[in-house]
Length: 162
Image (cartoon, rainbow, N blue to C red; front, side):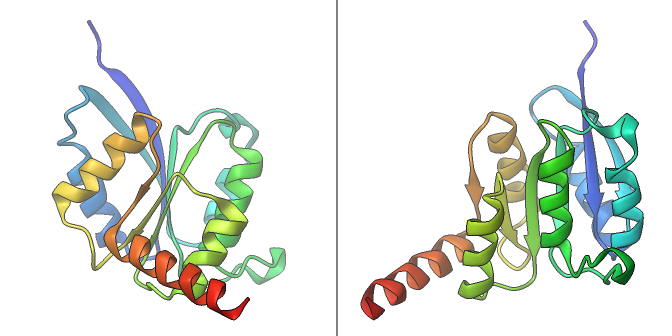
C-alpha cells in the first residue's frame, strides 16, 4: 500500500530553516510522505497562494511571522500571508513560526487568525516540532510552551485592566 502524501507550503526567508524543517518532517511517525513547496519572500508566497491550481492542494502551511514586505499588495509580514492562506487555500492547516514571544503579538495572531499551531523557535526541538506536526495532522491545536505562557499572562493582564 502506498503512503499518504501530504503537501506542505513553507514560507521563511531563511532557506536553511526550511531545509531543517523538511528534514525533521521526513522522520514523522505517521507513515506519510512529505511534498514541500517553498517561498522565501512574501511576493513569491503571494503568487503561489493565488495560483488557481493550489486552491485545494496544500494540507499544511508553515509560515514565519517576520518576512520581507510585499509593498505592492500591502503584505507586511507572515500574519498577512497566513490570513490570505486561510481565505484562499481550502482546508490548509496553518502553523505560525516566530522568533518573538511577545504576548501582544501572539494574542493578535490568535485573535486575527486562530492558527492550527503557533511555535516559538527558541522553544522547540526537532522532537517537539514533529510532535506539533503530528498533533495538528490529527486535528489538534498546538502551541509551544512560550506561546501558552505569554497568552496566559496577557489574559491575566487584560482581566486586571477591566
